[in-house]
Image 1 (cartoon, rainbow, N blue to C red):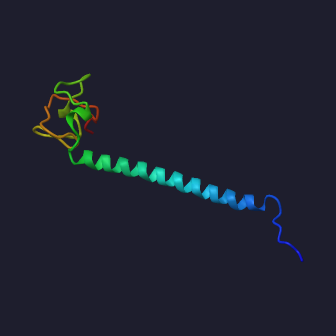
Image 2 (tube, one colour):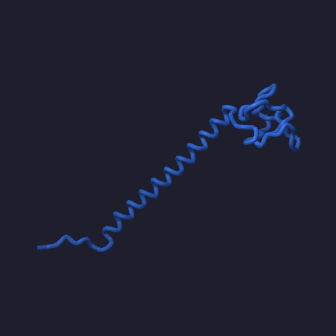
Length: 99
């Protein structure tokens, strides 16, 4: 009668692969969740739903930069990212000079 004895280290390989797969899956899930959060935030911002406070908006220029020279500004008083009335002389942290 012979017993089925697993050689030392044989079970470790199966466990390692399982752990590796679990860690890889967890990493991918975390990355996917982060990407989803960024995408949703960006879509919300693109719709002009970001609050003025969240954008760091101020109704005055900063360092010579102002909304009227920003690529996101929509004359006469709107922005592609920031909700509400936007002053042409205003500024926010998303300022992007027109090309």
